[in-house]
Image (cartoon, rainbow, N blue to C red; front, side, top):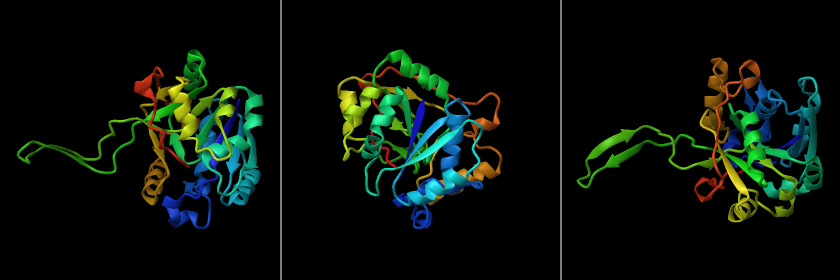
Length: 261
């Protein structure tokens, strides 16, 4: 089963690093975050990876060729164009993905202690075209609960958001390729169409998840790695400390399709 990793975006919110390197190669510890994403999948039995590149894709190709991967890992780069949107990148590799049967898709900047076995079991159980992992990240801001007199009754410092958002770690059936066009943004028309047609299910992940979106995220993830407390490093634990729960794919569980490269 192949894993397509979207790693062609410019990473504009991380320009401190991405003016010179693609976001997929920003390092956590001594290795690019892309390496961490591959290791999450490889530790749980997935071995074939398609890196869908764009911005500074030659650097990703050089890294993939030079890196020492675990035995049995196949990593191939596919140049999908500089300005191609996420769905268009998948469309560029669409026939290869269709021929493979069920396939996985994720982003090169998101890490989690996700149980991929549970995710795939849920995807196969419901039998529809798509499953998206949804998460509840922590807010960047504190929240104040205020009564009618303006009195603060409660203050929560950076609580978890109430809604669910697309966290990557997606599974698709071959028929999903028909929903893709060269101009498609994965998180917009394709996922919205699937939801409208009741072909999209959500896998609720309640464990650790974070994405390297800003400099602050990079600092936090590096701090966790240096402290030896990186929850996403499931390849270092014989028990693979993942946490996942399946939800039915009705209107109440369709994820916020706002996630992007």
